Image 1 (cartoon, rainbow, N blue to C red):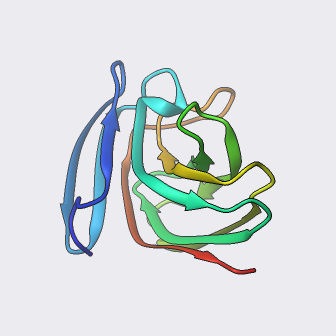
Image 2 (cartoon, rainbow, N blue to C red):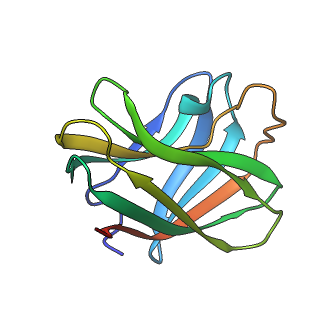
Length: 140
């Protein structure tokens, strides 16, 4: 809801996208998905994840083409704490929920990363992806 405040737009060549933050949404008009899922990403850094705690991430997403995106909770050195591959139907806004337990030591600078680049062995068409209404809560 605060535009791009607190968010990092990470589009890495050969990935290409026009990115805007409008009406409470991050909008990625992806013209080239690149060769890796991390070639097009939205990130939020500086998240504290406590060892043994359970978390729930929720957000809404919509794509102009059917495709898969990835959500991951990562350490600064890209250790994976939790996440999922999410299948988006064409032109259907959906709310997604991803739950995980922090099984590693407490991390004070974790990142929530939404990857929208090419996913190996999965058809990943260029499309416009909209992301909104993010929430990360500790459930236990």
